[in-house]
Every structure is written in C-alpha cells, then in structure tokens.
Length: 261
Ligand SMILES: Cc1cc2nc3c(=O)[nH]c(=O)nc-3n(C[C@H](O)[C@H](O)[C@H](O)COP(=O)(O)OP(=O)(O)OC[C@H]3O[C@@H](n4cnc5c(N)ncnc54)[C@H](O)[C@@H]3O)c2cc1C
Image 1 (cartoon, helix red, strand yellow):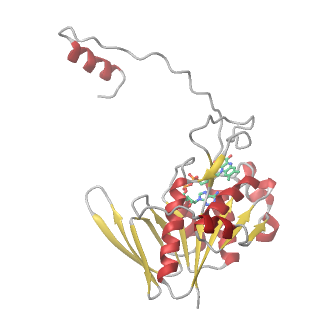
Image 2 (cartoon, rainbow, N blue to C red; image 1 turned 90 degrees about the vertical axis):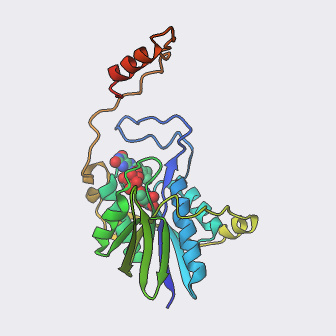
Image 3 (cartoon, helix red, strand yellow; image 1 turned 180 degrees about the horizontal axis):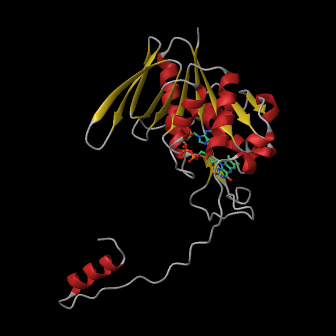
C-alpha cells in the first residue's frame, strides 16, 4: 500500500516587509505579501526524499490559511508534491495554535496519513509547538526536531541534535515528525515542476467539511488572546563610546546599564 505523507506548510507574511496589527489585534495579513514559510521547505524536501526512496508514496501538502495561502501550496507542488489540501474559512480569522492544530488534525484525518511532516517552526509565529500539539490531537507518537529522518519497515527513525549530544529516535507509524533546517537543502522548483504544478489537484475544505463548529476556532474559540499591542518605537541613534583611555570601562558600564552583563 502507498505510503501516505502529509506535509504541513504555512503561508506567512514576508518578514522583510513592514508588519502591522489590524484593529482586532490580529496580524494584518491583507496588506502584506506572503510566501511559503522557508522552514517548511525543509519539510517538503524530506517528504520528497522519503517518497523517492519508497516503492510507492504520495505526498500531500496541507495548509490552513487565507485565499493567498494557495501560493504556498503551489510552491510545494512545484517542488514535487503530488496534491494539496487548503482549509479556508472566514470563521478561522484569529485562530491561535490550539484552534489551528484542531483544524489541521481534522484535515489530516480526513485526508488519511501514515506520516505527517512539519517544519521546526513557522517564520512568523515561531512557536515550534504545533507538531507536538498535532501529535497529541491525532493520538500518535511525535518525533520532533530531526536533522536526519528515514522511514523503513513501518517505522520512522531519526537524529535529533542537541547542544551537547545527539539522540537517535524511533517510533512506529503513524507518527508526526518535524524537521530542522539542518535536514538538507531544499530543492528549487524546476521549470517543468512549475508547469506540472498548475495541473495538480488542490482540494478546498471549509469548517463544515471537517465537522468543526465556528465557535471552536477563530478569536472566540482560541485559548490565547492578545490584550494590547504597540508599535515598536523608531530607532534612536546609537551610543558611541570614544576610547580615550577609559573606553573599556565605559563599554562595560553601558552593557551593564542595559542588563546585557
Ligand atoms: C489567516 C491566519 C490568521 C491567524 N490569526 C491568528 C491570530 O489572530 N492569533 C494567533 O495566535 N494565531 C493566529 N494564526 C495562527 C498562527 O499563525 C499559527 O498558524 C499557529 O498558531 C501555529 O503557530 P506557529 O506559527 O508559531 O507554528 P509553529 O509551531 O512554529 O509551526 C511549526 C510547524 O507547524 C506547521 N504549521 C503551523 N501553522 C500552520 C498552518 N496554518 N498551516 C499548515 N501548517 C502549519 C508548519 O509545518 C510549521 O513549520 C493565524 C493563522 C492564519 C493562517
């Protein structure tokens, strides 16, 4: 039977652009360009490599996000994924990680899977917790933050590199995996891949299709709430320390005053 790989990919605001909060204190995603979270390209790459090794495998890329999130799916399809699932619904607006993970879990169950692969963190939220919450929701093992991953004989094995040691991890399938930016360079989409992606299927799902009530997601269904937000103050001119014999001392005093030392 075909190995079913689902890759979670997030469409994120371009970090090089100005980002603002909307009136309801959610991130304003309408007025900024977005793209496939760079760290999720590593997840797509590992999924493609696993699929290439397997006799028979299918890679589905999945996103929860607004209309424009299709761009992230297209990029993953042009890298080589087989099909895509896009969960889009106005009621998702303001969903935090708990609500987002609920939607992803239901969509993954509906799609069918043997392994779910996620990135180590998104480049906007950067919480790095979604894969663990997802595994809990799906009731399957989690093997997270892998720099090397292999799937063989119904098991996922991999290496997690820490500051002082590397761990070798193993879990039986189905499982949730997350991979780091050390797992291997992500491929660039080829021209052929970009053309082929235009014809690959993209399934659109709404909350109703996943049996999720509107009050389980969105601002109302979220477990976290932003109470206030303020714009970062404009940069001020830096402090220049002139060394006239006392430079080192002045530098140390400055760092201490800023609580750096
Ligand atoms: C349109 C939109 C509006 C949102 N509004 C809010 C809001 O108002 N308040 C709020 O707290 N959160 C909001 N979120 C949710 C938030 O942006 C994250 O998706 C979620 O909280 C996960 O946190 P993270 O990005 O830190 O994920 P991490 O835990 O850092 O992500 C790890 C991995 O999980 C996967 N992943 C994460 N998010 C998604 C996704 N959406 N689709 C597919 N895979 C994913 C990726 O593989 C990623 O590499 C919104 C999301 C979207 C798309």
